[in-house]
Image (cartoon, rainbow, N blue to C red; front, top):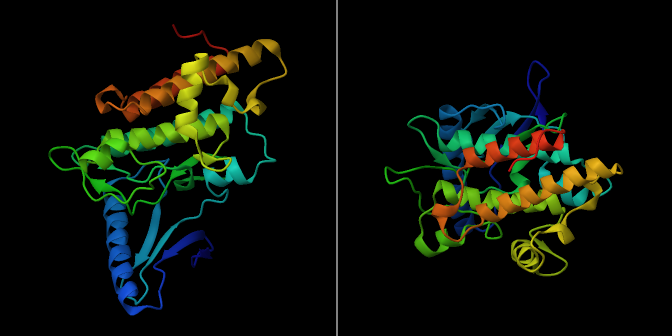
Length: 278
């Protein structure tokens, strides 16, 4: 963290130096590519729920990127480290909706359609109002004319299995990763929890056995009011079903990020007392 000349707080990102010269050369080259991708991405796309690049300095031994400062850390820490903090369902929905809208914007921005490449809670930052800001565009790729990218360095805990088979990373690969994020939001469990338990696999198993994932939801979201609690449970079922659709093995059966965002907006209406969707 640092400050600008006008006392604006900013976040500073720079390459890490390594002692071994061969490792250092390789890592610096890779990080240099990441920095170039981040800068190119920021020049092409601007959106309220994407972290904004303030400036950069590449003419030094250690390249530096300067971003707007986001004070509340990331979604991973909020969900899994700050366990004492109660997060209401509407708050979690707002985070999910803002993140989904940001990714949808990346996927359909005129002639410059990008994939994020590394969608996970650690890359969703939260401002003073817990408004989400999707970050870390070092893995982002501009889609080819055939609408896929290659060599995307995604986190293997969130990676699309279809990408591992085909080496083609598409918008639906981001959708898969976001499906895992949705499960973390409604269960408050990490993608690997209680040893080596897989959240996606266990949630799918629960839904097959019980018809829903209610045994895995974070019950802190439910209200003491019986009517509201019932409505919230219906909302969680809908989010769980949406997450499972995002995780479909057949990529053609997965929704687009725009469809995910719209479905989450409909769930939010229900959470606030609107009519149940059919």
